[in-house]
Length: 449
Image (tube, rainbow, N blue to C red; front, side, top):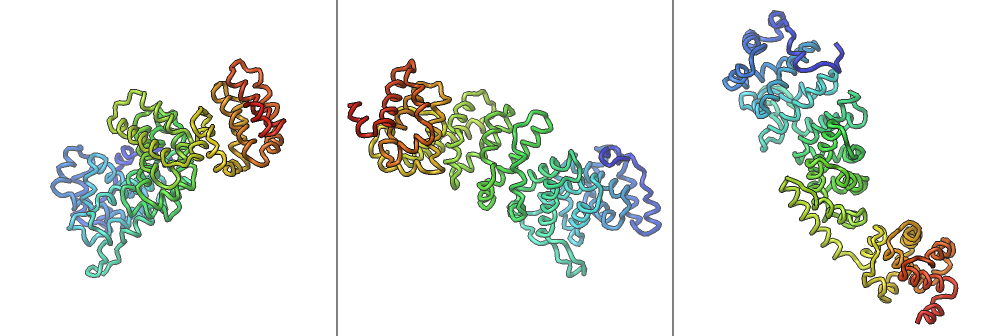
């Protein structure tokens, strides 16, 4: 059978020759009795058996995975465990029962991640994640086995091996359709663990998530997007991960998703992530750069049913306002220009602002000047056009090479087009700009006066 088509239900229809395994001493007589009592029974009957003797069944399952290598049997036992945990994930605690202290419960699943077919890998990953998350929080290193003379796997070994496999799936998935979603879903569970966050960052896994953050439409892609964003949210609580996030295109991708998504759970997890990132590093300034304050206003106007989302939007809005207040006057000016939302705020007509900040206009090869010229070409807002013309005239006045720079950028023709604009405010400021371009700042100011 094609491994891609295997399901837990199909695998569980198999008849495994347990008596043969007992005859060859691969399982005990007690194990045979437990298995025959359990398999092919109703869910309620199996639930009662697990309630009465759960650790004994876990011991049988783990020992089979450890001692038997036949693929069909390994798949069958993994399917039994998967069915057991799907019905009740809390049963993962059974693997940590004190009676199993001398069992290396992690090793078989960790080994099968790398050696099995896709069905075996996928089930081992899911089961291992649940077992890890169910372990007692006081558990650091697993028993060292001195009394049993066995070497046990440490939790650090388990996490390192599992994270390594998950990163491998994100880079080159074992299954073309299910490799990446399985890895992300597993990470969304595991990254609640501080140890996993640390291992994931050390494995350079953060950058592997960023490409998965993009607007989604199908149910499958929406779920993948949600779980990816959930991973980013969990990582936003971990400072080393935040530093990695700052070096990727994660932030603009998150903002694009929150701007376009209609799925409430996706919007909620992205907004919570943005709220976490806002006070860290340069994220706040970048969020303003990317127009997040306006996006938050639009989101707040929509009818969301989730109270946590509404509360997070309010907090994000207040945080962005505080961030803008803390920005320097030039930072504020820069945001205004880059967003194209020009208005007659005080800084435009403040001589002190221009004298103190004129050198800042040289950043990124005169980026701000170039954006002002682009506004002249593209904006339909008369106020923005008027302010852009005025600011260009101020640049000529205060920058020693202002006229030459604007001439090189072919500003004259673009301003001249606005001389006959229907709005008198635009015409007035276009005229001022042209005068300074042709006549020089001092003479133009004299004419204006």
